Image (tube, rainbow, N blue to C red; front, side, top):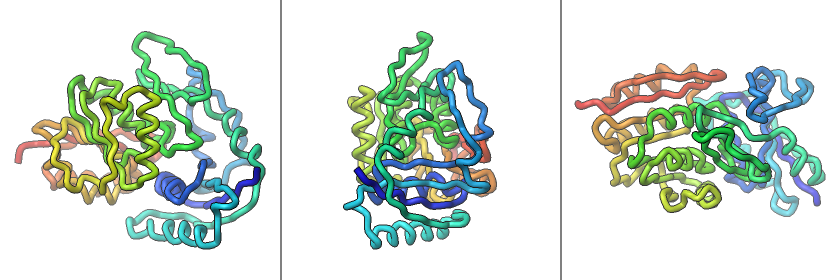
Length: 314
């Protein structure tokens, strides 16, 4: 079977939003060639063994490759994606070189070959992300597994922004709490919250494709009785107050929702925000403080930042 490979050379800052755009426009899989992977420290004890070559990666920025069925791809679709990527600039996102290329490839060139690079990976003290095709058993009594198919879902837990969120959720989510996941994507953060004992998780995403994927992943991970996935624009119309709100989205969007976050948190509730490039850390912190939130901690990995704050009395 033939597929269309639509590649976009962008910046590291734009990796997650561009990947999301490709999925929203019908990509059946997205491969990310990010040179930061070449210098990332990895622990073979968790089974994550990579054979990476610098020749496969760009000198700067990152290349994202979306794969579309030949019959589903058109000049109009390409133009729509390119326009959507340009639109990211309104959020002050650097889109880098923004070079695009289209070519036809055989299914064997991508559908299965990338699996050799993706194995179980421990992303926090207790959470291990496991591809659905792998056989894997917990290595300790406290290890919790999240089963995902990274070929079909965006936000699989291996990108720094998601990893930072998972580590923060592990620290702050307590049994019986209500958690809201803004921009849930694949649902990985909602699944994480459920595994740490949240009694109710509300997963929100504007994209109907993400809603469907998140619902499927919650079923696979047997947390569908705890997680409710809904199509919603950020926190608009939110009537439930939460003990924890987590948002792995764009820095400018986080700034936009800080007041809504404050209103939606219980007293002393926790807000975990990621998807923040380090250059925008001060802007996000300032917006949180202005909204009445108190910064608790800031974590950083590969130039990405996660900020944890708490609701303070006004």
